[in-house]
Image (tube, rainbow, N blue to C red; front, side, top):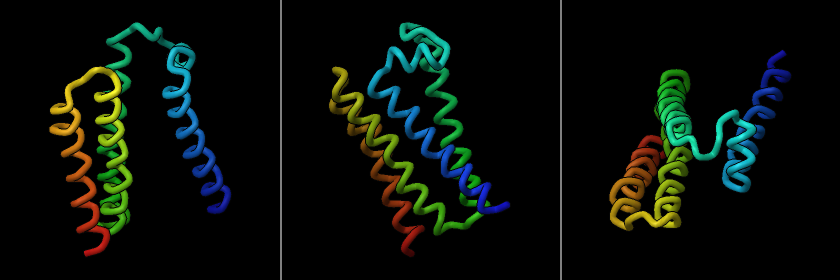
Length: 120
């Protein structure tokens, strides 16, 4: 039973990665398939807000369930989000100061804290 649950979990993880990739590769089609139009700013910001809240909740669950070493590795993996956010800002006409000062610093702090927890 546990093996089956792990297999389902792995499939779901890979599916979520594929769905996220679709939003990067074919944003209009992915947004329409999600159920909103690509020009609906309110819907898109709500999607981002829910994803950020869920990301924080997942990290807290990792910490509570698996301890600080696992949290450290999860923080390092989570640093992908603000690092990608920095690239998104830079490639869409945003300011370098915002990309590095908000998103870059966030990614750096996540990696630094993660390394201390994972290796220390």
